[in-house]
Image 1 (tube, rainbow, N blue to C red):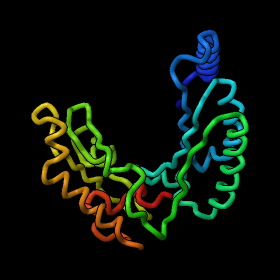
Image 2 (tube, one colour):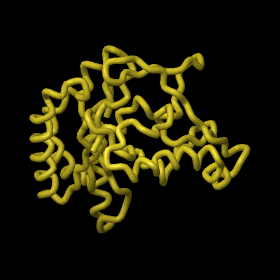
Image 3 (tube, one colour):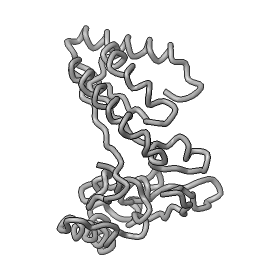
Amino acid sequence: FRKGCDFEHLDAALRKLKEMKQGRHGQGPSVNIAFMLLRSNWQELGQLPLLAAQWGVSQIVVSHLNLIGSEGMLEESLLAHPELWPEVVARLEITRQEASDKGIALHYHMPDLENPCPLCTENVLRTCFVSYRGDVSPCVMTNLSVKGGAAPLHYFQDQAYALENLAFGNINETSLREIWNAKEARGFRADFEKRLGMKAPGMRYLPAPCQHCYKLLER
């Protein structure tokens, strides 16, 4: 659901889908909710479990605004407002229990700006991202573009950085298996494998595109 969309239309469609699934003894597509947690909407978390139950949702995934593309977005990102985290976490835990009571799973990560994780939440050791052009990258964060071809900027810990794209190959030219096993791709994963063996890796061994990414600061 995005700004400008008709919520009543969405609500009616999801209720109809639930009704159709019930007529087929629960068979049909699984419905998940992705909720972007912002400074302006985190108080709305409490509404999720009831809506999810009414829509036949099986899972809610709560995420942060961790790709901050402008100074204006800094105000909306909870990453820039750690003073709110205790209250937000308390609300998340209450919401998770309320969802669980209705048979709905709720998942979220919380920021830890002081202790970078050995491996980011994109699970780059086991997954990759393939763009519409066929470029194979470690994750969506390393395969972004804007109109005109200019490198997009994002804000990380109050500083602006260019997002560095990284592609290991293109599936229109090389098979995905070959790209996955290529020297550059194996080297990228090897850097993270080194970090897994360290108790407090900090920012060590991080490939260049990952050195200013909030995905490493989520638990």
